Image 1 (cartoon, rainbow, N blue to C red):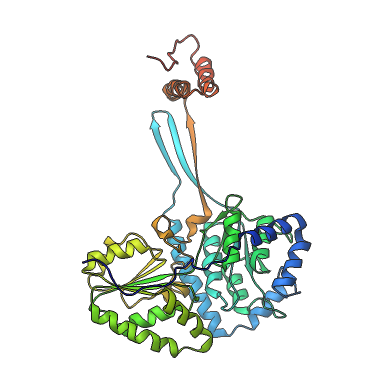
Image 2: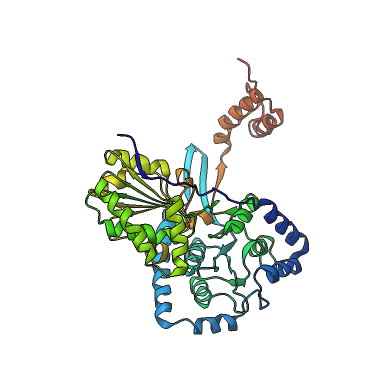
Length: 435
């Protein structure tokens, strides 16, 4: 059976995307040339905020005092879970030594980047969890300086809960600046900050484009597009739970795709009936995004069996992948392309987004075919080293000289020649590439 689309998207995540590249490049160039003053000029224009750019300890304490105790406990709970998982991930990285040939030792060493810039969205939604996800992992990785950057609200400043989360999770500095100007300030080391070695965290299309342009000059977590989610559901799935989870992800943005892949037509039809009702029941501010996302970007796909469902999912390579089906271990073994996997209805994407411990900064737009999400590994440089005795160097030098000459790289070959001549004077070596 080929895939049958009971509902097909009329648009894709990139449909109608404006070309923001020139605008972003212009802002970055202006700020690099103009420094702090130019960044403040753009902040006044876009953030409409004239307070301190770098929050003082007193301002951090004041913000923390505004956060309800119950929310503080929730932030601390989430931080503890993310930290625990990040520590377990870091433990998978190890320094290694191996004797390649007798006397020649090669090694691997892991070194955290020095300075991390963590962008935390704060527009329509205050992304408290993004502060937890980005700052905590940088701290566990061992970055020596961590900046949390979030857009302030006009005349108010950064949402207090974001400030509290960034502080609890270990940010060394908290910067009240949004958009391209915030990304630029971290990259160029403005306002007394060290220049960032890596930029992480979600953001709007301008933030994403700024990170894309700066990639290479600094590291980034990934080039991100609109968030997307796919649910694999069989006849055992609860249609109401499936529909609720779809709506939960559709509220992210008007262009956030949500997909259902199933081998059970009655479930698909019931989900399609329920979703519009659940969207209509949302508060108006959430309803607008979910309505557009479901109308224009959602798909419901009917497959012949679970093997075809799994193949369809891997083809879509979703950022978030939920399985509500029998034999969860089969799906865990079979599926290969996703940012984060949620097995069974006892877990859901929102758990991973907010508090369960795995990271919510994940690959979108099929990037899960080649990369995973943010983790301590993104902040770690895996470097190599080697050491050799003269005897171990001898065959390596001979091979190097001959290979280099075959490639036409005579200067390379002579770096091997000089060592052979120094350590083994009087010996004759065949260092030519010819037979």
